[in-house]
Image 1 (cartoon, rainbow, N blue to C red):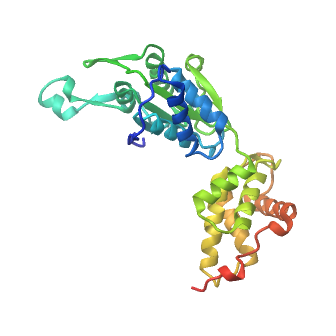
Image 2: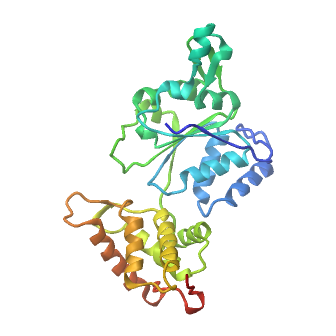
Image 3: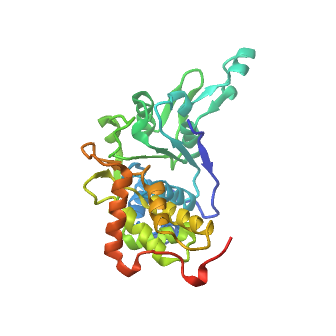
Length: 324
């Protein structure tokens, strides 16, 4: 299990989840989040509203749709502790709850001060956000452990006692509904205690903005071509699950470095090689397709070239070429 990561607090005033503060203060926090996130106004408003309403939240969408980015930004702007956990079958209840230090227990006894809090109990005691990514990879025993804290705001730990959640405690889970490898069905008891926010892919213009910000590229044609190629994977019949904007970011980075390793010229095969490196690990082909991922990517590149025409990236301008 990846250890829980606690985010540092911001300097913004803490906004209580009951909404007693003025609407102006609440909207100021909302604007702070919006400044950190490209687009996603509907999703930010819904997640923010859910937290202010003291609801636990399930974010559902394909990979690379800014789920963790938005939650981090909201927790930071609301000035609440943030614990990040990657879900897996190995995430046992004790890793969520915490455990008694075995060395101290053997030396002495089961004293409360020997109990080492887990991310769930830490988030409860601090009124923080517990974010569980890939929630549908958790074993049923670990997933069901969350139900009582979500419903009643308390949990009882043998030999330790009761942990009571402070105001603001929120569990936010995310899952990719299209992934059926290593995933488990989420129980109706859990779903009955959360509100659901659907996260889809963003518009092409927003994805171009994201790639520009993340890559620092000063070549608009390269960014536009990478985004178009990535987006076409989502509409290709041979592909069951396409690539996210992360693929476009990777394409831009690889192309730029391939050109740096030459005289700045882009060879005909360089863009194709970059796309294959970035995409073949991210796309999920339909089981009935008798073709390799590389063949499908070649077809997608050709389609992107036809759609973009003269805007398709064919190499760096002369004034940007560098010799190494």
